[in-house]
Amino acid sequence: MGAAGPLLTWLRIIAASLVLLALGACSTVRIGYGQAHNLLYWWIDSYADLHDGQSSQVRQDIDRFMAWHRARELPRYAALLRRWQDMARDDVTAEAVCRQYDELRDAWLRMAGQAGPPLARLALQLDAAQMAHFERHQHKRLEGFEKDFLRGTPGQRLDRRANRLRSRYETLYGPLTRAQEDLLRQWLARSPFDPQQTLQTNQREAGELREMVRQWQALPPGPARQASTARAAGDWLASRLPPSQAADHPTAAVVRHGCELFAALHNHTSPEQRAHAERVLKDYESDLRSLGGQD
Image (cartoon, rainbow, N blue to C red; front, side):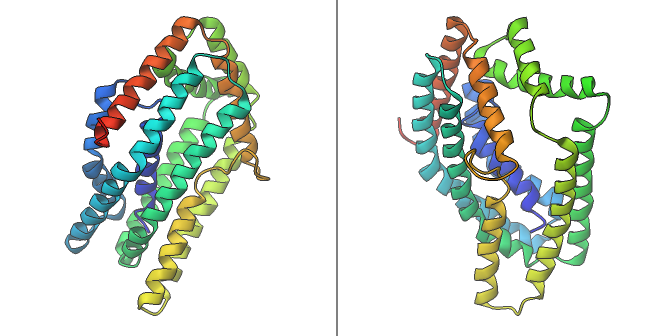
């Protein structure tokens, strides 16, 4: 399970970058997706320091996951992007945006179910040195979060968040106006996101993950252990994404605020920016259909 961190990262990249705003050109989608096998392996190896005997199995697991994703998920993403092109032409409500988030969350849950068994299998093979290696990387990631979200003055922290989010929006709409940038900062300043609380949660969950893996490894070997750990790994992955905005959960407020922010900014875009968004989404759709063999 020491590899769960990097695989989780790349599952999110696969789920989000292909259907959201992380890639800047349609050709990049094809190149990035084509390299996903190697990138997934590299990330897992960098966190778990795989042994030679583990490498072959991990590569096979990645190949199976990517084959499933290409056949089953890319058509869903392409259909979603088709719908977003229609939505891009008109004003939207926060409720409509949150419904799209829920669809992406459903995609994440499906991927978690697919990734759970191979993650559990790898977790049961990790030795003490690999667990120590993973713990060091956990600390490095936590330090990166602290650097990005907690260092500097409140204004500096807001600037970093605004710049990061502006770049994503500009991938979709093209350059934002000064008024749109101001709107973005105003909404971010009111966000219920609490980085200090989030860091503390991440620190607690990092320790819980290591303890969970040790408990798995202490179970008697056999099919029952593999089955129970596979389910637990899938459940753990599923819990990594914030819940539906309708859920009674603290982070659901952050999701709702994100939906409101997106709707507010979209509703202040020009016809030219919306046309730009429609073209970007259409290019993404075309690439996903090509990758999924739907042309």
